[in-house]
Length: 416
Image (cartoon, rainbow, N blue to C red; front, top):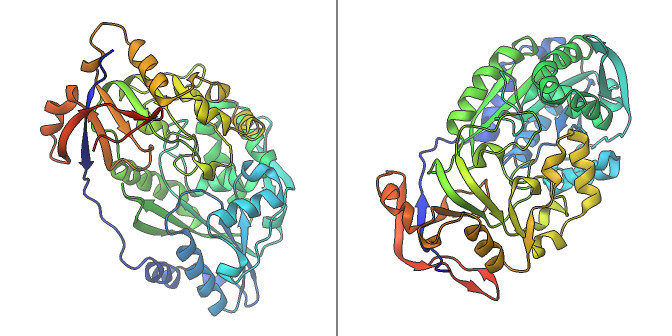
């Protein structure tokens, strides 16, 4: 088999970014109206728990400082649903991995595995809230707004999801996910509205990032504006997020997957696959085969999303903590995402099998793209079959000459 000739390229996308994140947080809080309702000494809980938010520590730090200056007591509340294994220890460990610690922020982190059922919306849809949140005099919800990896609706990932799912602990997350995709689409706004009607939610700080994981903008939102403002911010986030530079590929090679890069290991918005029974796959990009070669160490063995690939390596599977993976996948009910793909001893064998599976005799003419992961798309490798199309894209810069796909000790080398 003749392997494709590969070229290195830089994928340069325009991006706007805030120059003073902490200053912007202070400005938003200074202009907010909710302080008129807060008594000195009040206990104010700040939600935290979403992975991969670039400036989450500076944003939390600026909020903590402002609350203290107003004579109130800030606390950090883990709001991550079933993540962290659903235990206080696991939640605090996950936050520590994000740089969110008592030492870093100078405030207590109050974790609890207990969720209290405070009511229901619709016919038998329960509303759960972390017990700690019920002990607060006020709550400030802080989260990134971005497209979800399992569904698309007016409200996806953001402030309302953090209230409806994140603050629900494992009980709330499991209850909501039991209704499937339709439940997520329909019930997140309803649950969030119910919680805001029964808990002292004071304010929201919404974060939108650009294609380079930099904070593009911050929005301070009063609770009654959550639903309307989040819809607009979601449109902005979707416009700013990166995408693959090609819509039609024979083979996408992902060097590493994991929770650091996406809640689903590989971002479904990037690869164009959902793997949810009964749900249609996205129309684009159209990728015939996906091979993933390794699992990021920071995932601690959680390989949710491995089922999005067709081919993988024994090296990756040896790193999988199936207990953690199954716990995470079962809580979502999207079981196909935990199914192990065809696996081979080396990258060489896995990619050769993937190319062979495409059929035909000219595998060297396959449309192949290699990316490090689905979060960092700015240094890529593309096959000769994509070269003409690549040269017509203003954001792609080809670097150097091509060379045939090569391996060292069975591992895929870069095209340089």
